[in-house]
Image 1 (tube, rainbow over the protein chains, first blue to last red):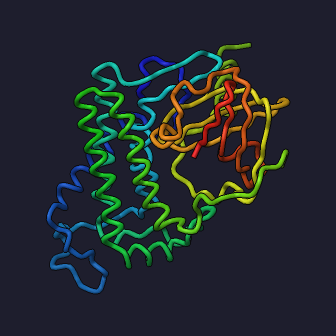
Image 2 (tube, rainbow over the protein chains, first blue to last red):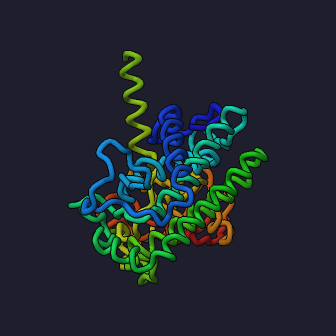
Length: 216
Length: 120
């Protein structure tokens, strides 16, 4: 976490060392898959050419839900939490990366997020593990799968738009421009939300409400 | 009190009163068929942060955690990082949580100076 010694509350995401390892694995996987978008994951019907020969095609292991939990959320949170203003009884804490090490820590988050979006676009990745119950307001994983498969180009456009914003975050980080990083953080949120409201909870959006009443 | 016990207590207090970093969620957790209006509540914390800002207020001993939109979108509504400060007395309207816990999605706030800001 990047707080510049601030007193902001602890956030719950993997420590830097673990994240670096995850980022390295993801980066290697993404680079290995460059240009192999047409590769199909083995469906088990075709015997491998050799029992000892390793498969070189992209094979999604995690569901989208698991990829979000393990990689996307921690990296996005790391990026979002890096710049904030917290007003509390302790005073006003405006925290942002200041040292080279702090900027590097945020850069790792942005890089991980960008490459995680490439992984999201690997076909054959299911919405969630079998048997997963949807969260409140969400479609079932089976319906999400069907919706994504029927609108693959749109799904990929959402993922690539988040990736491109993560690249913009990298540029802001390299300029050590905390204000721009904060702005890009909001842009990333909007693009994430657009995908979620399209594929995960299309029926759960903001809508007008009746007049207020006192109490619950 | 031993140091370790103090640390546990301090962490509990932080986790009990501060909204955790959350992933995105649907709006179904908020009951948008209802609005709750509270007058002269006291601001105890204002988090101007992505992906969503939070306003924490106290009213008659109850602490309400209120989720807002992102700072980018809130800025378009006139919000700034210092629009609220601890101790401010404000009027609020929010969509309550369906689970009955004190909190929800902040709709509007009337600042001490009388200006009204929309949080979404």
